[in-house]
Image 1: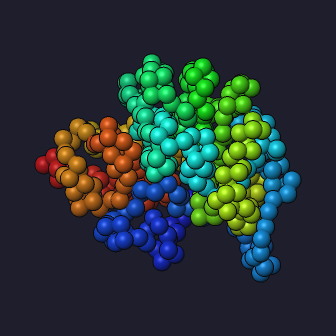
Image 2 (image 1 turned 135 degrees about the vertical axis):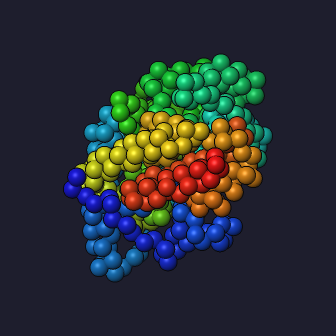
Length: 393
């Protein structure tokens, strides 16, 4: 490996949400944070170099993108995912959460039903409910330690609830599934059959492990492409969330026109200049850094898997196919919500994302962010083991 992901970066004191806001969020300062989905690694040096160039220039005025920006995004997706993006389909937005809310506002009306596959990234709920839409859940189910889709339930609820939109999480957060081509085709064809628009959140698309392969949803057919909003960003792959930049692709010209109108009504125009520069540098020159990162994350996953299996037999790691978010089943510990919170925060001294925020059926699960130096992950596992041993004694 060329890059050093073992380096410990002290993020405290940088107004970092992950480390600096424990008290504001009702947490103790001595917790080890492994919750929010950003990485504890320095950005790829090519990105820092591009940002330093802007800083040295010293003028931070209005900025927009030219053809070299799209070319960088296009080349990344063409080489990594074999999908040819269309420049005319591009709309830039500050974040995918913002983009989801804008889609909800554009393509549905008050009271319309929107379906999601739970447990799922919790801002999906907010985008639906805070905009006065009806939330419809298609719960995933576990079979032999792997989450699967209940297609019969999916189609039945689309019909019975008159669903207008489906928000797809691919790869899935928090259960770390990388959907197969067959699964995506089945979902997409059901949506076409019942005229359900698909918003495909593919922010984690670059994180794929083993023999799994990510398929860009609109790439699977021209009909899907005409019925989909594709949401992408370099923010997860390169840890750029604070620079607020994402890329939305809508091939259907009428859908794009309507969506662009909503963005303009919100008053959003030129994107963040730092976000533009970082995204362009990441996709153009960050490939070697990301490839090393993927190797490192695989090693972290292997360490966590072995540690839990060896030391904590009542805790079960759901095998991740993608993302750097590990979904852990703690139901066998037999703890209710309050006692499990005490176990995690008071005994293990960890700050995790509790399963219940991703959906009611996820009580007893916890989400770990393992995009951190091995020493940090080892400390987290040792803390968890100590609490586990005390519980079992």
